Image 1 (cartoon, helix red, strand yellow):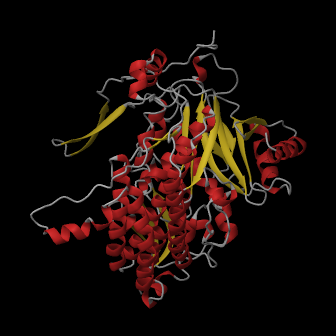
Image 2 (cartoon, chains in turn blue, green):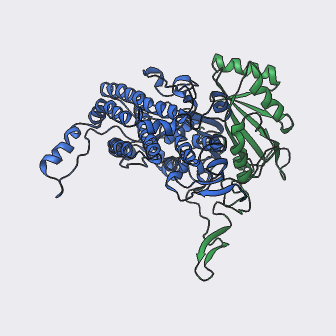
Image 3 (tube, chains in turn red, purple):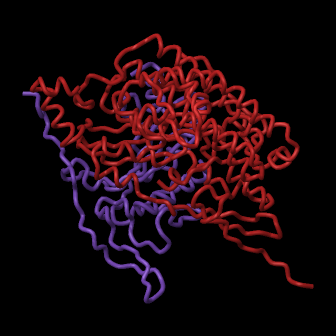
Length: 417
Length: 195
């Protein structure tokens, strides 16, 4: 009889189900995973080290490039940590705008997360459906910042500029007739807020559509129920946050427990799972999209009624207006100092965490009073989630390992930093 | 300082015997390397503290802090802890006693999630965590030499890599790019602009 030995295979770093550049060394006994050893760092760019040689404001756009599925949430943590150190108050309108875009980002991320989970498990349609809605939200990013992904829209002290009064429209092309063009531009006639408002009214129906494709689907349930089960104790000890923690039934959401910005004024529910398996985490993400939609709607209503400044008037961190800069000596000095030397942040240290779509994204700064951070540490949720891969995958089939990678909702930009 | 932070501060002082530092609404406790493991265990298990979740562990190199001569140790590990029971946050800092061979006990048995964070601190700063089950490099390349986040490690590194068509393999060579600094680092003197 032939000798049966364990088998070691490499999954990745070039594999469509590896969600980027994950090299996963799997030790298999037949088709059962005995050990999973993720090798990370193939996308390591030393963002934290780079930040030490750049001024406080120059490092901000790096945040978009960490988790490139939920860009603005990382910017948010960066700005909050800086504001904490500098002691800056953010205008209330800017806080509402930030919360609104945080939730837009959450929908962007969860659509992507659920859609790629579907794609990895062979359900392709939900991916195509989901990316239709993602496109609308990326248009919101573009309308407000000029960039579809790497927005650099949040700034220390507020946001870069107020919401635009006009939503950009599709232009005529020889491939589109007038009627098609009018239909595409039908909800883009008003301001950005009108467009987002229209989105919030049609989005719940879209989530229903995704659910008809997946939630009661027998194949979907067979592939996800009981796969990658995390007990609440395990989730806490392993440092899980976000849907990975709530999927296991732990009710912990920074938006509710340690509210930042204006989350304490908004009405939303914290979604909690029961069994802690892939299916429950899928359900948590689905329901979080509905809750985010509710929050966006409330923010839109508030923003319509309350105009005001969106940037602090402290010119040690925020540039003065062009008019003031040209007419006023002090503002000219502020402008010059800000753009040549950068912001000087008082000596000290601060940590700010936001409830990002994947979990708690935190930024920890040590400042020695210079115009550059002395040390920046990024706490990325997916890093801790992936570190539990061995524990989660052990004893599962090889095909389930793919489902587990996907349910962790990992993005290598922020794991490798 | 609000009443909740006050209460946590008093509890910490009573239980650990160390007075925490409060800054921008956050508490920091510093312990010596010898007491680190015991303090971490107390923080996790004491019923009035219950820091059952470790959010982050990172290494810090204080070599050039403030551009002034350094007092105290060079390397430290900084932990961010959360108590889900009491809804508290805390920062714990432990300095390594020896600058040449920074060593700390591992807390992986207290919080299993710290595993990769300690590997990262070892990889980037060379802090050795005693008792860690699998202290390999994690973020840098296979066969990397040095600890790149130390302050005396240049930002462009020492080696660069290219494909050599003659040898038909990837070769490592000394870096050819010059280090440059667009905006110089400035630490302002005290009382700047206030006279």
